[in-house]
Picture 1: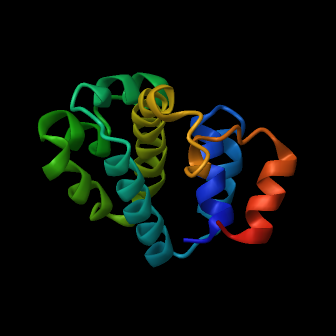
Picture 2: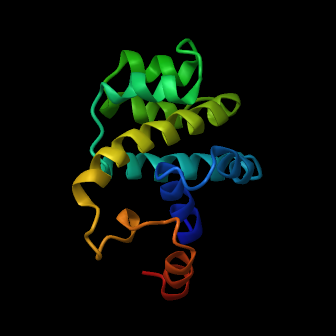
Picture 3: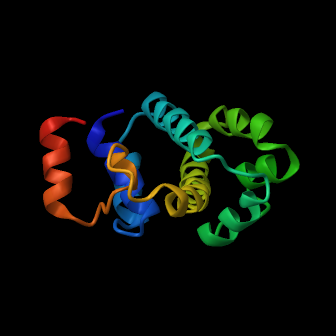
Length: 142
């Protein structure tokens, strides 16, 4: 995944970027690329140390119906089992999966953000509303 995309996802988690921006980019991808993005997002979720109870909060935050397939998978399986299943859903479910995973990431990320913010070696916990910082990050690629 490109650094710009990773920054955008982290900006969403910090409420700096809207989900509409991310969905617009996601919808322009081919199906295989969408699955790659979902896999990368799952990695970000794991790095943020989610807990199973985050799923209900993510569903509420996403405004998805709990009966949608990605929601059911994560509600009925532990994350370690459910997340890989979400990536393998049919193409018609990928948008809903992306929305749900973004919200799941945001919940886990914000918990970690409170613990980790201020550590300068971790750019993803910096203030990503700082346009100058983001530009320098894109320039240096760190």
